[in-house]
Amino acid sequence: MSDTFSEHKEPDEIFLPLSTNRYAEFYSIEMDSFTQDIEFYREHCTQGSKVLELGCGTGRISNALAASGYQMTGLDLSIAMLRRAMNNSPYPPPYICMDMSNMALRETFDHILIPYNTLNLLRAPDRIKNCLQQTRHYLKPDGSLLLQLYIPDKELRAKKGQRLFQFQMLSLKKDQGKLIKETLYSYNNATQEIRMEERYRFRPRNNKTRKNFKHTLHLAGFSASQWVQTIQNCGFRNLTLSGDYNSRPFHEGNDSTLLIKASLF
Image 1: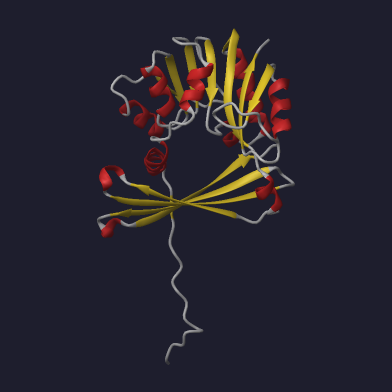
Image 2: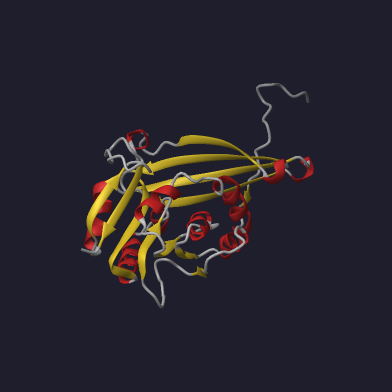
């Protein structure tokens, strides 16, 4: 029986589950060269002070600040990420494998950083509250909390559950091919949750090892005013809100990046 064009169907693409090691590798390719936020943290942290970074990932911020003379400690739950953090610097600062919502530390810090939407990833309000309360406990009385949050903007909210698509073409290390990243976002207005599906098309020069991977993340998608209220309820005061790394004032509804500096008094 002959095939017709109307009946022909291309085979579905196969996406493999993304392992922790693969995710750390792809995250490193995408993020290790990103430096725009580092100067923001340098500006707001006292030179030479003790700084704790929560969700340090592959160490791009902790390693950079340590090299600038800050007494850094990095904390992350992923061993795969921490291995890369330690290998990414000839003199890495101390790194700790620990859940940022269930910390057990022996010292306090002048500044605590929760960069690049890491707090969104905790998703559940109770975990977010636990993290902020413990952050307060490990902060010196005259210290400050610095964090970056992702806020659903008008475009994403207006989609009413439909997905937004983003595309990136990244170079593999030593120019050995390409990594294509596709991100699909959707926002649930009822649950205030962001669903983010990340698809990676691994395209090394050796075509025999081409593979597709994906995973799905669920993030807290609160408004800026809700985040402010949550942070204040956990004992922080004097909140300064910015919409970019140059400390431009935050504009609710238009900005999806929210940077906050908060103190205890």
